[in-house]
Length: 364
Image 1 (cartoon, rainbow, N blue to C red):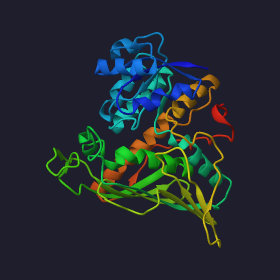
Image 2: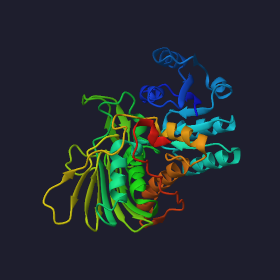
Image 3: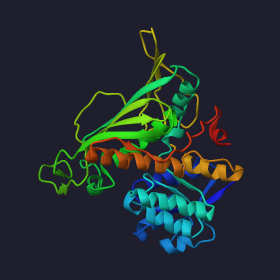
Image 4: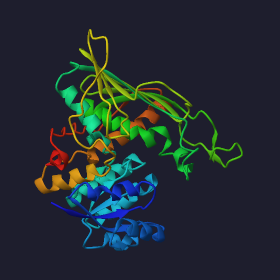
């Protein structure tokens, strides 16, 4: 099955998505839109896309079946709702929305219209994290009991051309990078049942660029968030996301089991390494990757959704999963303010693992 894709948003993330049709035969990009129509025209010319259109024309186009929503996070919900209202399936960049109620409205409208919603990140479908998932499911470290995850950096203001939004509500390290870590953890361990956290904004402002006299950016959201996640299946995980750290030497994600430890790769990537150290062993073993797509394969989640439409099965990078991650992220900030555990209402199913197969066959 092949669906025609209309892309909304021609910014920094769009080129890697626009390469997806060369990897996934289920996708064909037929139109692109952006607030800056000249930028959309430039992307269309670069990638051989037939048409660059204003948003309303793209949404009304008969040759667009699914909208790939690559807008800024604050616009995700509005664009997705408009696309669903126009009868299009939607696949959105992360997060699903910045506001939890808006995220729920997106899923409710999709259910009402009989349409699919998918959402990044889809890195958990890459070779590295699927290899780790298989190792866990095969019992390589026994029963999972705990996990740790760290995203430690000093923020994007030194390199990003427009870093201001990273320090406003709906962003910060939790909303910017947390989806990669939380999605990877839910893929491995299942849904989260409650959260507690401590969060702070360590500096009142940031300086854009590398020079001391650069433009000042006010900080209006926490930049260091330390959370504890209780999973429904029993494991307890510690997750720290920070834009306040110049250097760190900590694991990205480790899962601790009754018979060993599994070390996962950076969840913002598709490859390895995946390492295991079993009980009573003295050294780590690097596992061979069991799945394809170790290179940057953004768009695999969209391709999986389109393939799933053809067979009627659930897709893996689902709106339900993205809403669960969004609820957890909001709960981490709420828990810090309230000084207590926050119960998580959503309970998505653990995404189905990809089979061991070559290339696109893993999506069949």
